[in-house]
Image 1 (tube, rainbow, N blue to C red):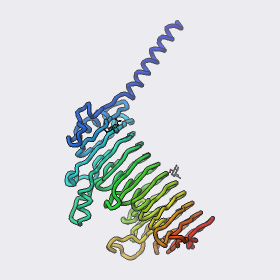
Image 2 (image 1 turned 45 degrees about the vertical axis):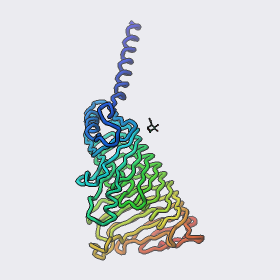
Image 3 (image 1 turned 180 degrees about the vertical axis):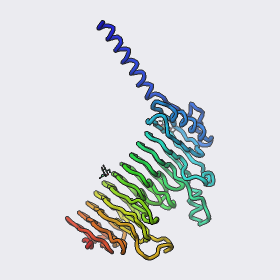
Image 4 (image 1 turned 90 degrees about the vertical axis):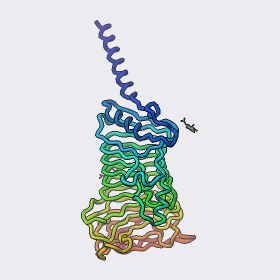
Length: 393
Ligand SMILES: *[C@@H]1O[C@H](CO)[C@@H](O)[C@H](O)[C@H]1NC(C)=O
Ligand SMILES: *[C@@H]1O[C@H](CO)[C@@H](O)[C@H](O)[C@H]1NC(C)=O
């Protein structure tokens, strides 16, 4: 009897193992499905087919993009899916059209919507943005441009080791998502490419961005309304406009930004270091519980900045000051060099002064001297050695 029970148990184990092997084993290789790594045959349809199969699978599924260059006219990958463990494993490069009119009527080139449980690893996305940047530089009327990769209404996503180059507009957008981890990303766009933010997070919570290298023409990371519980660590930024919360407060009714930490990062030759930026307009928005620490500034124009008077072309800002309430912002262990005399600039709202700002262990130099600090409507405290000395009241 014991013998048969053991046998049954072994058979059971064997079935379990088989199921498990199957569970990890459904792979859709886009070359096997007909995609050509020649950089010019459109692989959109094959990718779509692979996605439909992976998304429709009731067990975990992998889409594999082998080595080589695949032209992808556009990729729109929608859920909800039948499983919550889709992997997209990329060894090769996906390249967009170099013709800026091809995606003129959409917002993102590679776009995932309504997906829960997605992992993307490796590979390169080449947005071929040169035509569009040239158009924007020449001040002709141009399409807005598209984001290289966007997540919309997605949960439990990991993106690792993915490179984004030459994006028309933003490189990565995380919009209306929960629990997204991005690590080991590489963004590479020219320093003069317009609107090419590295990673843009909006209306999302629990987003972690780790160990990523961002060189671009706009913000390395931009954090917009409704973002909360963000952890950003190990970023190198430059060229670019720095790490920015904002612009906030463009709308009267707007969700605030809260609980953001940026730590252990280096900014080199950027326009700003760590910035909070709001429109000088009425709004019920806010930015609070924001922490910047262990940051190295190398020749940064505005290392520490709060600018609540943003108003391009001085239009539509009825002179009342920003309604966005900025509070509980801490700066700790921020060292290095400023490319301008004023290294700390708190230009807060006359109607809603910044409150509970805190400076601790800061040393920023300009040339071979200590830089300067400027405060308007800024309340808070300083501790440890702070150079330039704090002007908070
Ligand atoms: C991919 O292709 C490149 C260029 O042909 C080659 O150098 C590289 O080793 C290949 N990688 C893999 C994983 O096959
Ligand atoms: C703040 O965000 C971090 C993630 O960065 C999270 O671990 C923590 O629980 C959040 N705190 C609150 C009070 O939500």
